[in-house]
Length: 144
Image 1 (tube, helix red, strand yellow):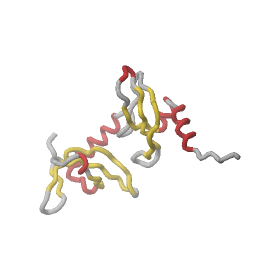
Image 2: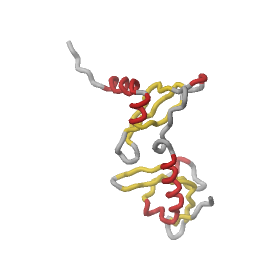
Image 3: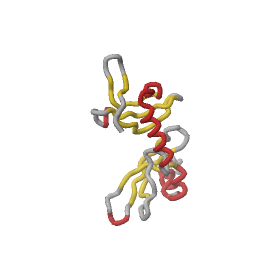
Image 4: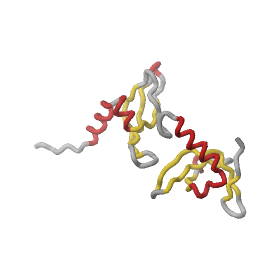
């Protein structure tokens, strides 16, 4: 699919390469835009109003969310892989659920990988790692 121009000002036009993520900020849905000819670290978050001329990209991105087994940016449980440790926690794009960044032990002695897993998947597949992580975070009183 060829990129459609997106008018940012009356003098400049930027071409969208892809919509790569979605978030809700201050109650407004924003999409992360990868611009054609610009690096990954030059992506910007744009409200839907700014993306009217490239709605096919937005619709394609939304459709991709529906076909994935889990939310954007999340990993899945590969056969034989097991969670090693939780590295960090954040809220999902809607701010409704927690996502856990997990380091994985992999079969076949491959190097560990890291991915984001939603709270329900982690509770179902690896509750012990979640419990261990939370126990480390609890501030225990000193009993002297």
